Amino acid sequence: MARNHKKPSRRELLGCFAGVGTMAVGAELGLLPEFDASATARAAEPSHGFVDRVPITGKAGPGMEPFDQAILKIMDRHGIPGAAFALALNGRLILAKGYGWANAPTGEKVMPSTRFGLASLSKPITAVAILKLVEQGKLKLEDRVFDILTDIEPPKGKRLDPRLAKVTIRQCLDHSGGWDRTKAGDPVNWEPQICRAFQVPPPLEAKQFISYVMGMPLQFAPGTDTEYSNTGYILAGEIIAKVSGQPYSRFVEEQVLLPMGIKRTVLWPAAGKYLPEVALRHLAGALTPLPPMQLPMVDAAGGWIASVVDLVRFLTNIDNSRGKSVLNRKSRDLMREPPAPPIKRRDNGTYFGLGWDIAGETAEKFGYYKEGSYQGMRTFMKRLGSGINWALVYNSSMEFDPVDRRMVSGTAEEVQQLIDSFDVYPNIDLFEEFP
Image 1: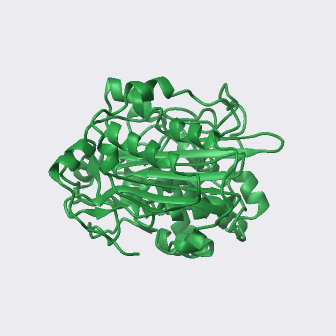
Image 2: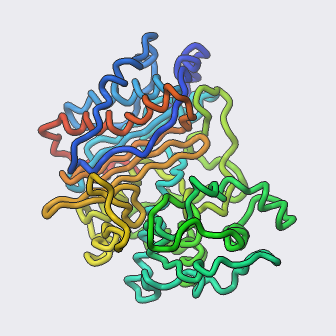
Image 3: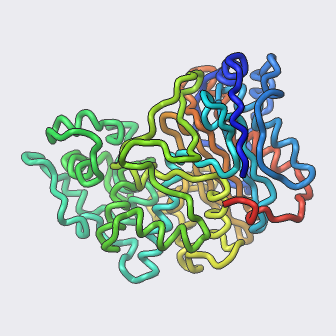
């Protein structure tokens, strides 16, 4: 597609970076009542009219224009330079849009094909790869992680928590492995400490990270509770490499992404360079771009780069609404299965799925939701019980702030409310329009 690189004015850019914020764990499945963010949204409406000056690219069926204003207002409210949104119904892509700038200094616009850092939206990709190995008979979800990763040892002088031996692959994927970052902190943020401990330069590899974590105690017995954990997915990535005999990325690309028709989704380059057609990362409210992500130890937990169109390709494949799913029926059911007792569902009936923050189902409907956040990245994707799949990505993080936390917590809910307001969607399919 042709790209217009007209450089935006400083006034336009300053308007685009007008706010800051963060996001709490978000929306439900479309099966349950939604959070009402309308009062928060009205209180935070921008007043300077910047939304009229942000470029919009891409295509959508007739009647989908309200999504443009909704996304632009969210961007303006939180100081976001670029975003992309895509929506499919029953396997048909009916909207794919880019908003704002992928590279503000040069004026490169966000296109629907622009790739964004996915942050934790990488986790469902890793979970599907694990399920693929299970289908191939190379793994069982109940296999114990450290019976497989026998080549990794804890740092010298560190005592192993005996409960580590009981951690299973399933527990890594449903966040019941025993790690609680609210009590012990998140080791993915400890690269400086780990480098010092091993006396090695950055960037750290996954095996070095795992070795360090093996020397730390668990916060709860595996399988007795659930707490969100990046560590479990870093372990899962190393298991994929060990069991498949291939680098993690190659197995995922060959066995998961390419069979879905996804050809441009890749990991952040180890060389620490931005690839073509990748949105620059920003902190909210800052005009200076961040450098490209260079943290290979978190590849399986947060290292993928993709367009929103490819995210929706992924979603429509695993729900079996487009083409032949890479997962069979049994694997798709396992992906949505709740953690085993004694772990209980949340009060609203939802739970961690394999790769998903929120999963749930009724007799006739199922859905799941995932969000991601890292420096310069804020990402969301969701499957609704109605058969709608959508993905929304920003090239700016939303920082912690007492006021903006309330506003950002409604971001996904605002989009969901707009989706719910449509009774009829256009009967088109735009998948062939985008790489």
